[in-house]
Length: 427
Ligand code: ATP
Ligand code: MG
Image 1 (cartoon, rainbow, N blue to C red):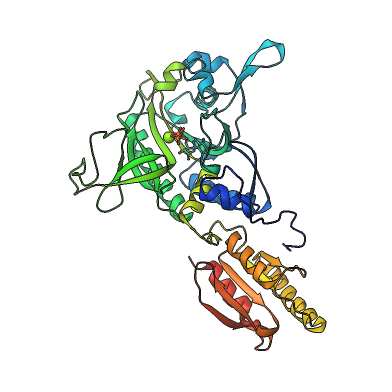
Image 2: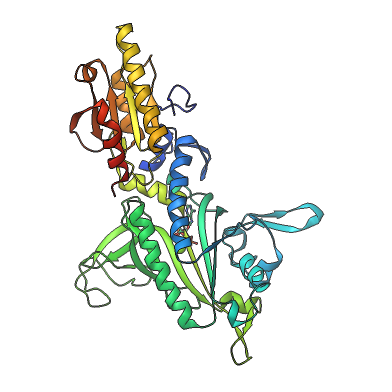
């Protein structure tokens, strides 16, 4: 992608109400645009990051047997009236309105009420179980406060997985598998998310949240000494920093954190509401056991920015960066040299894309100073910056710099493809 073709532009001005780093930097770099509080458009660079996160989530859900579907977002009130959630939490969370024919409808904020009757049509006997189904879709929630950029949206992206089992044992086994898959998702996205005990709702003692420590988070957690398990303040209200851990594993450290995922053993909470049963081996009808598991890819995107930025801008992990390479060509007042710089840069971009499928964001603007180009590269935060200029060409080279490091070095033009390919592929 050439910067001269990219319709978005960077700005020095952050939106006035942007209190958090993600709101400020994503807007300034042209990744997202705020439509109203908690509602964003994803622009080309931002959408690429979101899609990269969704791809990681999708791969890990597929690896644990999840089958992808797409459920409606516009929902009939009927199943919600059945579970009582049309009234409670009702409009406090759900956008509800009157549709054609005077029907009560609402926008999806979670999908137990849709997936349970749907799966009921297909699950009849123990032979149909277990089964796990997920979707990646925008959810709508009438959030009271939406002030932390894309961390808390009123419309936001969510992956929701639902699993159905013949026994609690089978549900528990799968729950542990999902927990491991979630840890892989967050590691691959370059963030540290700590499994955290949280309240489980009415059917299970606890659920697990995945909490990423950050000052911009709204939750308070107590992390164990090893840093690999935590308790949400809501389940251990009497604990404070330095107290013994609830499981006896040393002392806890108090931290602010943002919840990037949450997994629940719902057991029969929804299957009983819809009378979803199956016939077991002995011919007996039993309620299906159910679990639900959420990750917010858009919140993950904002969380990555919170965890990984500096004064100059964002610092994307390779796995989710909008492009792996940011190529900068620097022009001067020497027209002949400019032609050379341009053709070498174009050669690098074409070669990487055609030969290795490595997509390059090429800053080919001729009316912008080197300083401004470098500032934009830092703001956008692509992990590898390559510079081609009169100076580097004097050495038949380009300049190599990784975002987040001050070190630069020259690499020969002829060896660029191999070096970049190795860099992009390495974990
Ligand atoms: P919170 O406590 O932060 O309001 P929640 O517990 O209500 O979140 P869940 O219903 O568990 O959220 O949703 C699953 C996942 O969806 C969350 O772990 C989070 O990653 C994401 N998510 C939830 N609400 C929002 C929101 N308003 N904006 C962006 N992502 C969200
Ligand atoms: Mg939650």
